[in-house]
Image (tube, rainbow, N blue to C red):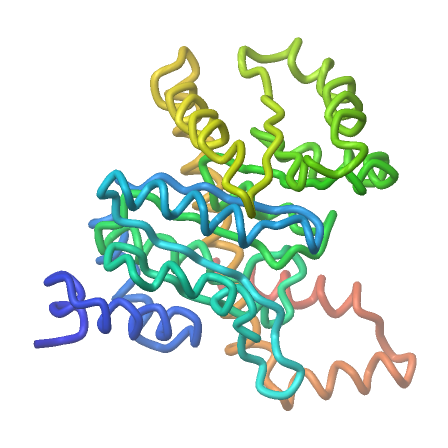
Length: 315
């Protein structure tokens, strides 16, 4: 049997191997990904993001347990920082989720950011699609927690949960132009600490303008994930947001926006691969660098020349 046949037969090792193919961006991907896309489309994707130390891994752990108790199959993508030596994931989140290994219906994959500045590994959307095609009903995506720049999670998920802690109060002004803008649900974790009520109130005031423009109320949930307090309420809010997206008056528009974002994500990834492999080879890249260093050209002129050459080739 081929790896795809084993995958379609429910072989978890085949799923792991296909994810490795996706991460390595191998030459077989153009044939593999369309087959996976045909089988995908049933899973619901929930992204959890926020500053480092907010308790994202613990919340993912508790949510996964509750979904597993309902006999749902769960895929977890834990995006870890890249090792500076190997380029691979440091696997911190997988270590913290060891207790989930007792659930056969939970599949955990740690991924390295590999230099991606958006908090998600560049291929995490395709990995989520592979888990979807494998039959996972829920996919939980946890970002590396790099702060304001991890905004691309919204393009890979149906529901985005931003997790903060009481100590985040002083950084709300910095966050509101980034993470605050992408959240569907806010969580104040470690809510037993002083300042939890204050930060919830501050977020609520920031959200007043957004709430007037939509039927979704952007709930704020207080949790103590380590003690499993408030996690059931978060789970309920996720279910309500799913209902809002799929059965509300804007369901058709929501679906179109999701497909549009997916199309742009795939296009940008493929274009980047094409430019790196077909145009900016090591020899060509070094030539352009020398041109810039000598003052003969600059990055803007070179980029424009490359785009113009692509346009000529198209004709």
